[in-house]
Amino acid sequence: MRLTAFDRSLIEARRNPDLLTLPLENVRLLDHLLTAEWGIRLLGSSDERYAEIERSCSADVAAKYADLYQQQLEYLIDGLPIPNALESVWYHFIAQDPLNGVVHSEKRTFIHGVAVLVVALIRRLGVKGPILDVGCHTGYHALLVARMTGLNVLGVDVSRAAVEYASKKAVSLGVTSARFSCGEFGAADIQTGRDGFGMVYCSDALPKRGRARFLQALADSLTAGGVCVLVGNLSTEWDTKELRRWAAAASLGFGLVDDVGGWTGPDEGFRSKDVLVLVKDRKEPLPTHLQAIYHHHWGDFQSYANAADTPWEEKTVAHYRAKIPLNALARRGDPPRLRCHLRSEKHDRVLLALDLDLGAQPPARPSRRQLGLRPVDEAPDVAPLAAAQ
Ligand SMILES: C[S@@+](CC[C@H](N)C(=O)[O-])C[C@H]1O[C@@H](n2cnc3c(N)ncnc32)[C@H](O)[C@@H]1O
Image (cartoon, rainbow, N blue to C red):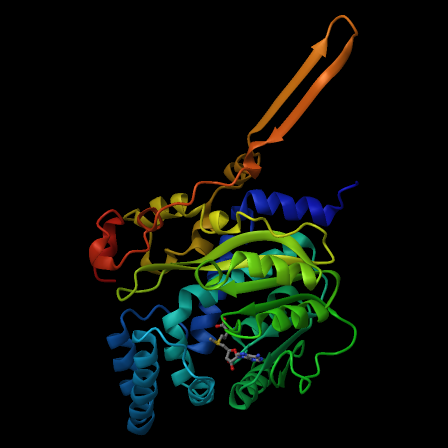
């Protein structure tokens, strides 16, 4: 079987996800644009964010925000899913300036990380457009991806207010290669076009129910060889066996596993979200040891994040990767191999030829402690966590 250039890039990035990076100035530019154009920045604790809402929004908006936030919190504390009706009121309500930026600042590390990762995947894998952003909300990813790659991007969201916001933002920023459509993805009421997308990504908008159907709809939106990027709590909220089955049924083969994340602020410390990349019509099934692969490269990131001279806003996987020198990246891309040839002198031929890629072994799953995912006050090994930003 001949490997295509796409296969080679995919396998290289699978072995070393640190290759999924952009030049540091691009990583910083994306961060700058999120702050300058969307008001999405590292804003510290939830108290600081609320103070900012009280300062920058009207008293009515601040009061409604507090009420909706509290209602959602009560479900989360009880370990219950937030009802769809409450979620839609929330997404509708936050699609207004300046609230949109302040609220999304809570997820700044992930929003920035996904923007970097999607652009890096498009470049490294040579993805051709158009690109589909499922659950785009106010369009920050779609607009940034369109600008950074020059490809056409369609953002879809079930929230009409969010789609109206995104469409107006595209006009005000003069971005003509991104457009937005309102409707529930996977349902008949949304038109994503007939020609198929080169990539579909769904960040933080994966459904809690109807997942098999949703994966099928993602696959249906792609051209053959198209790339599907899922970002969410896959390692904790998705069953690997089911996911394997659904992906196979939707003709989505395994691409790679990665994560986005970093410092989120003093409330939650360091956090990550899982990334799973699938490829339409690729034959390789999802590995059974998928759970073991999530987060396995967080160790190196942790040392970088703990360094006293790493600025708080750059304690993210995206910044870390952009700062690894190119030669170190190339070296790390070479997984250890075990080669063993047993020759028979008598018959002058090879009896046994073994060529094992040790990098393909399932890595040991690190503990939450190694990942630095514990609450701030319990994580003395992640050195500067307790310090104020
Ligand atoms: C948490 S936000 C995520 C926004 C953005 N993708 C990000 O990563 O920050 C979830 C968004 O997905 C939208 N959404 C959820 N399910 C959807 C579906 N089936 N079709 C379209 N939009 C959906 C919601 O309206 C909301 O705007």
